[in-house]
Length: 181
Length: 205
Image (cartoon, rainbow over all chains, first blue to last red; front, side, top):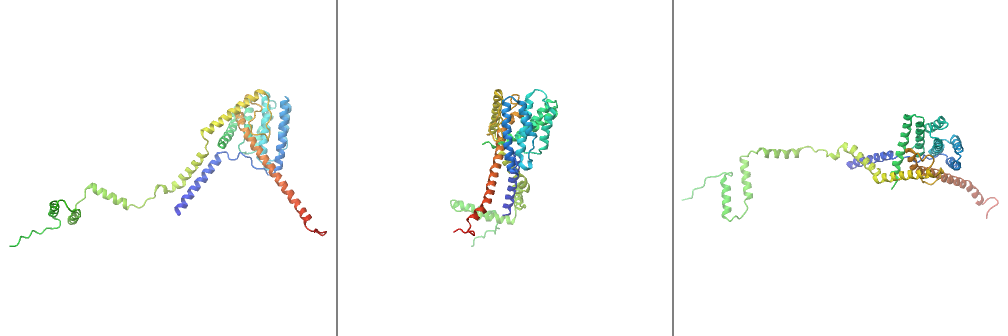
């Protein structure tokens, strides 16, 4: 009986350790933490959705400046805190800023207009929003930061940003692989 | 005249063995002498013990050593095995179970390649629309696809899944908020219903 208890406790410890290891390795928390204020999250999502549609129309009409302006207003507007609406809101904001930077970068081959402001905006979002679970929007924003830095010939810093983006994407792709049947 | 009495022989005399064997041969090899011969050997050995050879002695000593050694702990009961090897094996097993196979890697590689292809094709046509928060999980192509960097290609492959997660989070919140609202409505209307159905002063019948 004593031996059985020892063996079973050993096996149980091993199993728990293995599961914890696997859980940690597989990018456990791709889903955003649940929000405290559900109404605020729903309202925010509707606002962002509407603005994205507006930007779609502006881009389709060839009004890139208008599209960029709309995205800037959305990105710089008042956003509810992460504690209130959860990580999903941060993902949405990174998506908005990412689209804005992409539009700016696509307008020119060289240094985009207002380069410093763009870089500052990107850094503020990546720094202020704290540690997040790996997600595609933040990874893209880190990559865009790298592209901005690369255009400014700050290659070392660009490389660091690219590495962050690629590492985050690697975790996400690994998790995606494991989910596929 | 009486027959001369044979000289007295000891029990270890070789003559016993010879006579017993000769008697058996004379009787046509009938009977079994093993027990008698064994007894003779025993008596002879008791009288004059024979020294064992080196090999035989070593063999006997080995047997004695094995039989008299203290009981040792089997390898599978060692503490190290129990607390290190077993957890390590369990962890490894779990890691192997969740580890993607080559087929899975090929699938994702194909997905990424498809996404890249779709991004290139769509970008060649015209700037495309945003999928938005509530869009279906189809990797769309957006601004910047033509000279796409690796992170953009990966984003194209992951975007559908990410938007699906966002959509689920928002829809869950909306569903829960609706349930809470309905529950609060129910809690507010129940006392009114009770008041209207309870016989009051004016009296229900």
